[in-house]
Amino acid sequence: MEPRRSLPERIMVVAVIQLIFSLFGVIAGLVLMFGGAILGGLLGGAVSGSASDAAVFSFLGFLLALLFSLLAIVQFVSSIGLFSIQKWAWYGTVVTQSIGLLLNVVWLFIGNLLAIFGVAIGIFILWIMFQANTRRIFGLNI
Image (cartoon, rainbow, N blue to C red):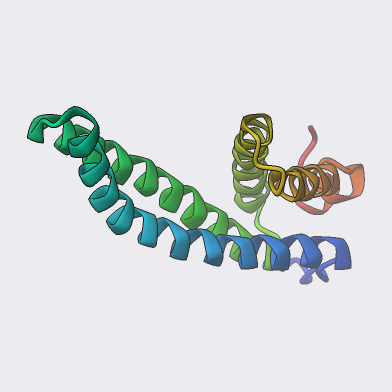
């Protein structure tokens, strides 16, 4: 039986940061899922004046919030896996952080200056995850 490896501090920091942001993401996704669908329906109806357009806007708002929530849930599960040094958690973290980094860069170019924090955190986490020592801890030869 292989002895349990201790969790390095840098991975614990990544796991905690990711856990906190994923919890906020799940909450925000749920709020957007229901509130955004209602607001999308109201705005869609007000803009076009048609009930079918309102339904389309409402559905799109719900769908985007659902995707946002699913991303946050995968990020949450990955952060739990990081605590126990699971190989799949490394992959989940890299994928969710890459998607989050891309979204934050888009939001930054749209004009949301607060997205710079998301960009910085995403770069930091990806930098930690691609370090040779971190990959070795997770048993990766990438």
